[in-house]
Length: 88
Image 1 (cartoon, one colour):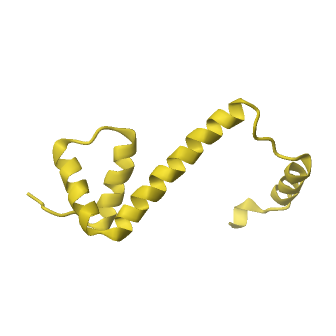
Image 2: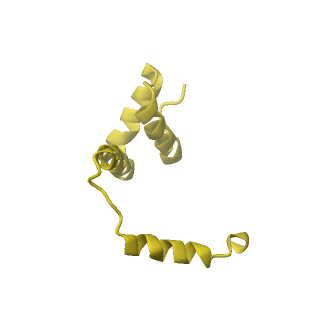
């Protein structure tokens, strides 16, 4: 049985943990890695912060609290109209 995950495996577990409940084994592997790795602990904080922001945006948008100025819409449309997506 594997006792430690890599940072890459941990990032997958972090993402998976946001969507579903992890098995006891996976949860222990994740916790063990996070106890030893500052970078992954930071990634976890960032992922959860982004999740909070995105959930808040959905609530705000539905309440018409976020409105894009017409000038911004026009500028974005102009950029998109002038972009050749075939060459990206």
